[in-house]
Amino acid sequence: MYKTKPILDIIDSTIGITDFNSVIGIILKRIKKYSGFESVGIRIKNKSGDYPYYVYDGFSKSFIVSENSLCQLDKKENVVTNENGNPVLDCMCGNVIRKRFDPKAVFFTKNGSFWTNSTTRLLASTSEKDRKGRTRNRCNGEGYDSVGLFPLSIGCKNIGLLQLNDKKTNMFNVKNIREFELLARYIAGIVNSANTIKKLKEAEERLKIMVQNDELTGCANFKSIMERLENEIIRSKRHKRKLSVIMIDIDHFKIINDEYGHLVGNDVLVAFANVIKNTVRSIDIVGRYGGEEFLIILPESSSKQASVVLQRIRNKLDQVKISSPYLGKQKEISLKFSAGIAVFPHNAEDLEELIWAADNSLLRAKREGRNRSILEKRKGVRVKPLSGAIAMAVNLSGKENIEALEIVNISKEGMLLFSAQDTLLDKFSCRMPCLKNDIPFMLNCAVKHKDKLENGSYHIGVQFVDIHDDIQEKVINCIGSSEERS
Figure 1 (cartoon, rainbow, N blue to C red):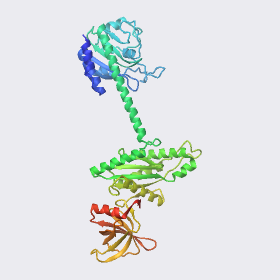
Figure 2: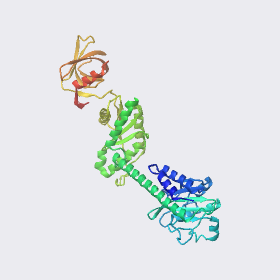
Figure 3: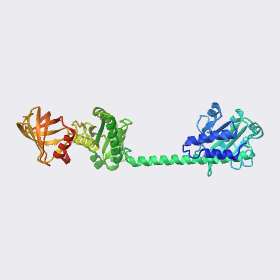
Figure 4: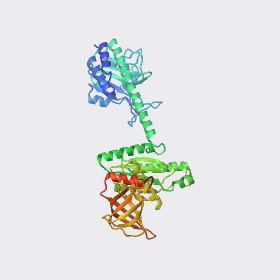
């Protein structure tokens, strides 16, 4: 029969194993091996208050299907609950778990366990009243004579039970019943520890969400969205793929706050954030950048795809009328928004430049009348030059000066020049003195566009031709101002 040494062996076999499913599986197999019982199972309480088999070995599939749930059902197949709202549990398993037992009865122990060496004799010699409730008698119907049910107890609560069945009679005795109760308490401790660890992990996850998400809208907060954008830029560099970002701002949000109050404003922010989150893909990231501004990260997306996303958001927003319990007589608010799009690596080489490019496009959208989206088309971020920066246009031979031009802004890829007249050729060389050390640069340039201004002068966009990376950096460092962008 069952020996104390096998119990210690079962306990020792789980030391050092941290995975709950592995531990329970090992315990079940060892109990079956050492006890000699043909069928062994462990029931554990689930979230709905039922106690299905968590692991089992030896029971037929039909037995498990019919006996897996212990919940009593009414005529409409609904779970019957008691006055405390807990499910009413059927069968002897339910009696043991709910502590419906008589310690004076020979088939119950003082610890609330049930055992019998002959279900046939037990059913013939006792009533349901003696057995403390309705029993299904499925074990007897399956031919099991020896049946033992041992509660998994933590303090005054039962969180499951250990079940051992065999078709032979007389499998239980006083000694092994005590040992099974000892094992049941050990299993209960493991289950309780696992539940505690699970709750701690769930609490950690909730805390992580609280730390990373904006409390009001549920979007990523500023710190989190910046960290995730940095990671996405690194990933885009590694895989050489595009990354689009959208800076989006609710139009005239201050008027909403001023007219209806900040509580209504909060409801508007939540509703607006939900529209965005429900429109983007699961891999996209939505963050609250600040106030009524939101940042959307679109991994592996082009500017065209970003524009499609914005149009979808507009379409959904047109269909949504935002309400708030604080609105008073006015029941609904309609929203419009402005947005700026920037793409990595076309518009920027790092996070700061990408954010600036998207934000600058957003500002342009506002200046041009709001309720629109602006795509940053310029390659690279442009900065304002140091005061007095001049570009001397010369012919390609470098011998004949054509015109001295004011530098409006400059980037690693090109610059915007101001000219009083349209005299530049499509291709020319450009001599630019470094204002920090007076050493000039000679760069070949190609005109990309000419925009005539109202006073008859011109803004001329030029691109540097065949410029090396080290020269690009020197041009920006010598001519560009680190304090201003344009």
